[in-house]
Amino acid sequence: MQRLLLVLLFLCATAHAATPQPPSIIGRSWVIGDLTSGQMLAAQRADERVEPASLTKLMTAYVVFQGVRDKKLSLDQQARVSERAWRAPGSRMFVQPGRPVTVDELIRGMVVQSGNDACIALAEAVAGAEEVFVQMMNREAARLGMKNTNFMNVSGLPDARHYSTAQDLFIIAAALIRDFPDLYGQYYAQKEFRYNNITQPNRNRLLWIDPSVDGVKTGYTEAAGYCLIASSRRGERRLLSVLLGSSSEATRAQESQKLLNWGFQFFDTLKLHAGGTQVKALDVYKGSERAVKAGFKSDLFVTVPKGETDRLKAELVSEQPLLAPVAQGQRVGTLRVTLEGRALGEYPVIALETVAVAGIFRRAWDTLRLWFK
Figure 1 (cartoon, rainbow, N blue to C red):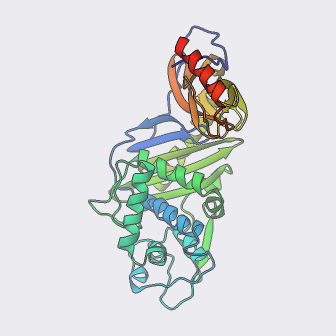
Figure 2 (figure 1 turned 60 degrees about the vertical axis):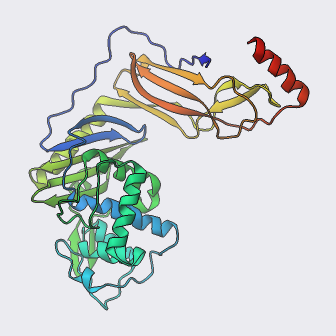
């Protein structure tokens, strides 16, 4: 393998980059990460299994949004309310059998009012039964890489076999925002919702405190404590925090705000490359062209401690020898980004164009070149 060095930003100091210390947080476990770059900034007991309470509803919403995307149900369609949904314990939006309710209203009841009855009605609309829908939830959790999660219901009611972690809940919240940005934006910043002549506020207090916050979900049971997953977008950056097991409604909002402010104040996120633009031309053997333009599918961002961007170094390691045919979008290398020798991430470099196989004479010549090489 031939190494091709691409220094994006020059190492210009010898002191080791200091990692900012996170604030002291009141909570059992927590995570803070930058969704723009995909990097985790800090965490505490992120893989400790906990009862996820109503944070479960993020996966419920994810599967429902898949159904909307795949046209298995529409937002304006009428949904049936079963007796099981009507009798759901815990927080409710107060749906009633025989009373008209749309999928859109049920989603708002689930997201804004945290209605357990809404969750069951949605699960039945998508899968026919809550138990079948739960299987879909667990399948998606596995696909997304939620390795320490198991769901037993759609609402987060306590069950010894119903568990997750701060890390896994970060994964599903990030996936909800990434995979369904329009639906996420349509529902999760809503401060209150009225149904059946009952108005209920969104329990996420940060929606009133911080205008940059646009979601996502609160949760509480006696075992779980007070939990909050919060998303904040300031400029191009979006940070996501997960706080589990805090001591009160006010405290979970205060401590989540503390995490978000720390992430914005002590880190910078830098765009290294625009998606679809050439980073390097890589040699191609036995192809109709001698080189292929290589770059990234989408914009590439990295997050570093504030003031440390001039210490970044990036190394492009190409696949060599690169033989035709080369398909557009094919991975042809890896960009390794480090800060003072500490790995920040590895990013796939792809071919931005197609290179077809050359004629017989060029292929023969390149075979000879590779022999001597």
